[in-house]
Every structure is written in structure tokens, then in C-alpha cells.
Length: 545
Image (cartoon, rainbow, N blue to C red; front, side, top):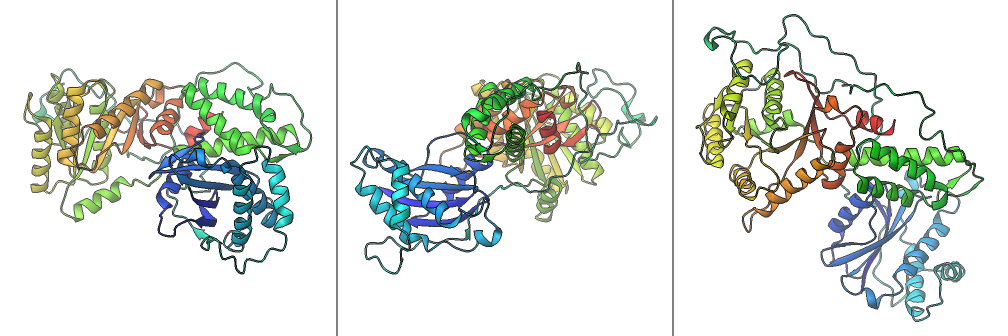
């Protein structure tokens, strides 16, 4: 049974909707669908949610999506589904949009309730002709265009309930326009009085009691400062797109027009360390989004593909919700609670070092910080944190080794609240994503202490293995959540060694595309001050060049 038919603008506005039952709520599943096919550019054919199945087609010339939903498992009783969508698309675009390539804001909000009568006629014609297998969507839409000419909508006793148009659908996570232009990064220069040694120390150089009370860094940490990724000089070439020579005449863009360009882009993305299956899916999605657009020359095709790919990359990498750590810290402190970070990840990726960089940044923002040493498994973990603590002048809370990590974290948070500490940084043991006992322990720590931010620390160098790590860590947190409790999952990613990837930044795209978890911070050097906010435009620039 068909439950609803909707016409959406890609900007998130519903232009027309028809629902079998007014009491049925489609907002949440349609939000999820639009996130997947518009914002994340996922190339999927069918989407199911809330015992409903959704199918759709695009009108790329007009930035529209025509969506149909029906009761899950009733496909075999609705053989006319595709013809209904095609006919609705043909009638809607011919009736309202034949003279315009894009809707203006005034047209988006105008309302299209008068399309209800047309849709009733389409629904009746298509469903009644479903027994005829020779009926095609093109002939059907042409016959409908004449049959609905001048149709009055003032009364059809069997008409469905009145639809609505021009309402803003609450689609979350639409990326902001007007991205800031990326400027050439400046080389960092260090002053003589700055600490320039390694972050991990096997030995202490001098008695702690004789050290200064000031932290061992003086450079201001600016998370928004442009950062550069050192590149290997490449041999002069004409560029991978300059090898494409074909010339096209004026026509509607089709799959064949884009095949060679998309193949070049796919190979280019793979060379940038993007996972093969993700490069495939992304290029297929771009192809689907551009079929039907009008082009006049090969250069136009190339620029359209490039613009579409760049826009898709920005949408994918831009967080769906803004995470302002300092604002959230202030809010938690006003409520009388410390803000709690939990750092998770596999062995050896630099969790303790990353934690120390975050600590240095918080100190410079006048926050009182406590480090909780909850890696009670690895020998030397507490001593490593103590070394960072001494250099940063941040106290460490620990209870030695062999203790329950969740209990240690709980005690640290309780002590922080008593001492009016602003932020608690919880270090955890590194563990492989397939180690079930350690993953259960991590899930217990997160569930018991309910941190404000769970940060996965991964290496920018590992490529596609990072996707597997992040996916399995998140799945383990979900799997080991107690019954009847909401799962507490990973909120964001920090990538270490981002200054060593030589423009092969594809692992970042692979992680976000596969999980939807945003990258918040990147480590760009060996100093406490080498911490930056993840810059979407910079990464997209590296991926496209």
C-alpha cells in the first residue's frame, strides 16, 4: 500500500506532499533519507525505516527529489511504482518548471497545493493501467499532460486528503554556504625560549622540584590557523584531467558523457588514499546527480563534474552538528559539573600525546584541567602521563595498575567536581578493535561515566584500516550497551600525524563517509602546540588537486 508521495527541493523544502493518513509521521525517515542521498551523496536504490520502504527519482535540472513510500513487504502488489514516480515528475516539471531551470526562493515558498488534482488523476490512471505491461512512463506522462490540461481541483469525492507545499522540512546538517577561501599556509617558526623536544620521554632531565612552575610551551595554540601538509615535489605534467580531449555538442548530460571523467576522478581519489569502494560509490552518486543536466561543451561537462564532486566532498566532511568544545565546557561548568573527554583508540596511535595537546590548548584558554590515568593495563602508561603532566603543570589522578578503569574514571570525575576542575581528560588503554574483553571494559567506562565527548584517536597514515577501527569501536560501544539504555557512541575523531601524509588525506574522507562521525582535530607536528581544528576546505583542496 502506498502511504505517501512527496516532492522535495534539494535545499530541504517540501513543495508537495500527499499522505494516505494524516496521522502518519514521515518527517524522521525522510530526514534520514535526504541525509543519505543529498548530503552524503550515498548511491543507494532503496531505503527502509519505520516499517516503510522509500523509492525516489531525481530531477537534476531543477534540484528536485520525487519520493514515494509504501508499506514494507508490499512491493509485489505495486508494480506501477516507478511509472507513478516518473509520471508525477513529468507532470510537475511540465506544469510549473518548463520555463525555468532552477526554482527561485519566491517559487519555492509559493505552494503547490493545486497539484493535488493533477496527482489524483495520475494516481488513478497509473494504478488502473498497472495490468498492462506495455505501458511506459513516457507515453503515460504524455497522455497525462493532455488529460490534466485545465483540470479543476474543486472537488473529487474520492480525492486523497489535501497536500501541502512550500513548508520547510526540518532537514538537519545542511552545510553552510560561502566557505572561506583557503590561503597559503605560513611556515611555523619557533622562538628560542620555546620547548622543542620530543613529547614522550623515557628519562627525566633534572629534578622535578627544581623545574619552573610554567608549562614548557609559550606559543599560542590557534586551532583555526591554516596548516600545511608537506608535499613531495612532483614531475611536471599536464594534469590528470588535461588528458581528456573529447568535444561534446549541446545536449542533455548522460552517463556516457561523464564516464571517462568520472573514471579519472575515481583513480585520482584512490591515489589520495580514499578507499576503493568509497571512491566507486561517490563517483556513482555524482553520476546520478548530474544525469539530465544540460551541457554545451566538454569544458562544461568537466566543470560540472568537478563542481559536483567538490560540493559533495564538502557536504560529506562538514559535521552535521556544530561541536564547540569551549562553549560546551562553559555550559557544563555553569551547571556545576566538569566537562569530561574520553580518548579511545588502538595501541600506539598517540592517545596520550593527543590528550596532552588538548590539555595545553585548554590551559591557554584558562581552564583548570585534570588528567585521569585510566590505562591500568599497559606498564608505564601512568609514568608517561606523569611526564606530560610535569611539563604541562596539569595534575594526574591515578590509582595504579590492575584497577577497574571505569571506577578510576568515576573517582577522578568525583574529585574534579569537589575541586572545581573545569575539564577532565580521561586516558584509556589502547586496544585492538577485535579484542572483546577490552572493548567490553571500554563500553563499561563510557556507560558508567557518561562523558561529554568521546574522541576516537586514529592515525592519518593507516588508510582504510582506520575505517575498520572506527567502525568496530563504535559498533562495540553500541553492542555492549546495557539493555534499555541509550547507546553512548563516538562523537568525533582526532587524526594524528596529519603532517606526514603528503596530501594523501583520503583516510579522512573514508572515515567520515563510512561512519558519519566528524573529524574535529588533527595533530600536525611533534610539539604540544601542533594542534589544529580539522579544516574541511583545506582537505577538499588537497583531494581535488
